[in-house]
Length: 623
Image (cartoon, rainbow, N blue to C red; front, side):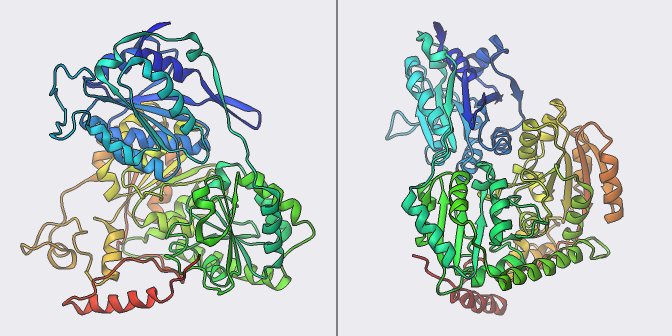
């Protein structure tokens, strides 16, 4: 079949399907694109010529459309995704942050940036980066370290192996992330006689690989011998659809469960075994149990520094680790027994080996008491009655109370992900969607749009701070264009409150984190900018200008009224609420390693350094 390279690519992608557990569906369900001279007459022409092959979505920002694709894919348990195409130059490099976020979070997205002319005849062309030491380099080489697969298609026939290789990576549970095919703008338009077989319906089978029997037997022995076992549930539990198996095993054995950010929702908050988040943003219940755990069963977790509280969370000298993960890199972490395999298949195998075994009754009672204490603490933080401005925890409580069990909360950066990890009462396995692997400011609205496109039957509540909102709010317009309603709760604390709090805790007074006029010619927070006049910035008016229906909430009662009213509005809603930037949620026996200056003139910094060194003394080697 004689087609241009771009036409062949679109036709190929439209024929790619995945299958797991007998369920089969398309993998690439659409393409976001912003067009320029590097892709307009190539991929753009191919999408326009055959719109029945692939749905085209318009975007306002290249980084945002990658976040939307990632949100879509994560909501579909990584079994589907969207493609993203841009021109060469700034359009392409704008996607680099989105690519990194997808790869860090092991979420498949397909990136199709235009590239410079393969022929090199018109060099240097508009937006071309010239390198004095390499003739084949372009700005797209920036994608190499943040992609799980990268190729530059220099001839139209190279598309065949490149596209197949990209699909192999995208559909791999262990190796997935961003796959980037850089497409020179002249090659996109060149024709080639492609084999018909290239365009046939292709089904990529997603299997469930289980660890070998001796490893499973050894794991069961370790669990049976443990007195204080703890499960740490990561994103792999949800992606592998292991939630029901986990519920059954936990109810029978009594092993308590702590959750990572990606794993939150593995158990509903009121399940008898649910201790909530663990680590640097963990609950008092989970962190107390983690400290004395003698065995930690990690399910689909990368054991990042937030989960391990920078290697201070698990303090028992006898602690052992069993790591279940499809990625060998993660299953071998912390010196644990590696069970490399699918979380659901592995849990089912362990459940069979743990029949007629459970933890001691005293351990169950201890966990139950801690769960009850924590539930009371969450209720307290939800109902502080803080004045004159509400606390952020009260805002989260209002949204949680007025959302339905299947609704989804979306967030990404700042202090809210930590507060949500501690406080959000998750009722559905897909009801919590926080991007915290890369903690990407600007993900929130774009990611929420992706979640809505993936499952229009769910209501989406996007929690976003003013800092992230100012970085990337324009996809409000895209949500309205696609009739994909979002309810965006814009929490305004006039600056970067999360980093301001961290800065103050390290003795630097929130330096550079307030949105105020300069007052004394210097740069800072509690010095230069805290006493300056407020900036004349009206974020609610900005949201209205982008097409959203806007409410201004002056207090929690106004917020509750706005949340109720928003349910009856058929387009994206933004609820603006001011909060107290200084009223935070406690850390609950956790620590996070952020280095402090070893020498300084400030007494506050010196005190912070002493506190930092006390934290360093708690770190453990797990090898």
